[in-house]
Image 1 (cartoon, rainbow, N blue to C red):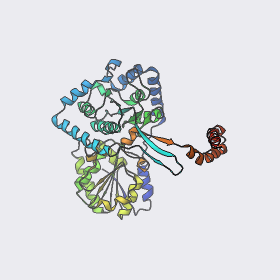
Image 2 (spheres, rainbow, N blue to C red):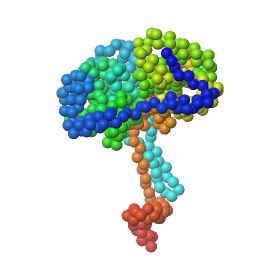
Image 3 (spheres, rainbow, N blue to C red):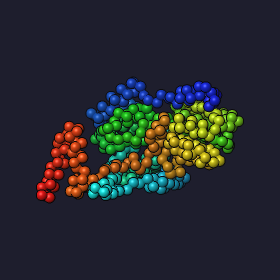
Amino acid sequence: MSILRLDSTQVDYRARLDALLSRETDTGDDVQNLVADILKDVKQRGNAALCEYTSKFDAWDCTPETLEITTEQMQAAWNTVSDEDRHGLTLAVERIRAYHEHQKQADWDYTDHDGLTLGQRITPLDRVGLYVPGGKAAYPSSVLMNAVPAHVAGVKEIIMVVPTPAGELNDLVLAAAYASGVQRAFAVGGAQAVAALAYGTESIPAVDKIVGPGNKFVAAAKRQVFGTCGIDMIAGPSEIAIVADGGHPEWLAADFLSQAEHDEAAQSIFISTDAALINAVEKAIEKHLEILPRADIARISIETHGALIHVKSLEEAAAAVNIIAPEHLELAMDDPDSILPMVKHAGAIFMGHFVPEALGDYIAGPNHVLPTNRTARFSSPLGVYDFQKRSSVIRATKDAVRAIGPAAAHLAHREGLQAHALTIELRLADQNRDTD
C-alpha cells in the first residue's frame, strides 16, 4: 500500500497539499441533468413518478399504498431490536438532546436612545424532511443526529425518507426513528425522495427544509431544490485530520481508518512533528487492514486521498489544519489546548488521546452532521439553529420616527424610491400638524 508522504520542508509542499485537497466532489452534467429530469417528473406526476423511480432504482414493487412506513412498523422495530440496541439508542438520544438544549435561542429586545425598541423573535420550522442513507450501509445514528435537534428546536412534524433496496427495511433505522420521535416515514430514497419532500406528492407532504446526507444524486437534488425549500448543506465524502505528538500508533492508525472505511472517496490525513511516529502509524495501518472487513474500500480511499504529513512545529500543524478545514479533527496530544487556539477551521474537534472520532459519531452529544470538503471555513455543524428562523422586530414611537425619519426619507430619495420616502414624510407631516 502506498500513502502519500508530505513534508513541510519540501519546496512544493503547499502545492502538493492543495492538490491533495482538490478532490472533485461536485457532480457532472450527466448527473445534474438526470436529477433535473427526475425532479421535474416527480413534481408533475407525484406518487406515480415516485414509485416508478423507486421500483427502478431500488428494485422493489413500490405502490402508493406501500410507500409509507407506519408508526406501528417503527414501534415493532423498536420491540424487535436487542436490549443492547435499545440501550444504545436511548443513551444517544438523551446525550444528543442534552447537548442541543444548550443551543436553543431566545427572543430578545432593547430600546435605543432614539426610542426605538428593536429585537429578534425565534420561531421553529413547521415541517422538515430527514433524508437517511440506506445504500452501502444503514445509519441509525443519522436519524438521531437530525431528528433530535429538530425536536429541541420545536419543529412540529418530522418526515423521514429512507431508501429500501430490494424492499428491505432496516430494523435499527426504524428503531432509531421511533426513539427520536419521527412522526412519519417513507420507503423512498435518491433524487426522487428529495423531489417528493421539496414539492410534495399525494402521499408525502412538502417540507420547509431537507436535512441529512446522501449520495451524489441526493446532493445534486438538494442543490437544485434549494429555494423551493431550505437545505442543511451539500455533504461530501467524509474526512478526518489527526494531529499527534505521541500516543499509541495502533490507536492512531485505527482513527485514521475510521473515515477511510466509509467509502473510496473519503479522506484521512495524519499530521505530526514526530517522523518515527508517522512511520509507526503507517505500519499499524497496514496491520489493521489485514483484518478489517471494509479493507478494500479503505485501501482505495487511503491510496487515492490519504496522506501522512511531517511538520516542524505545532504552528505548522495548525496551519495545515486550517488549510485542510477538516470535517473531523483529532488533537491526539497530551496537551491539545496548546494548539487549539491556533485552529480556526474544523467541523468537530476531538481533544486528547481518549476521544476517537467515533465517540462523537454516536454517543458524545454534539452533532455528527458536519461541513465537508473545506466548507468548515464558512459553515458549522448541524444544530438547533438550523431548525429555527429569526425574525427582526421593530417598534417605534412618534418621537422615534421624528428623530430618525428624515434621514431615512433622504436615503430613500437618493435611491430613487419616492414611495418609500413618502411613507415616512406623511407620518412626519401629521406629527408636525399635531404639534402646531
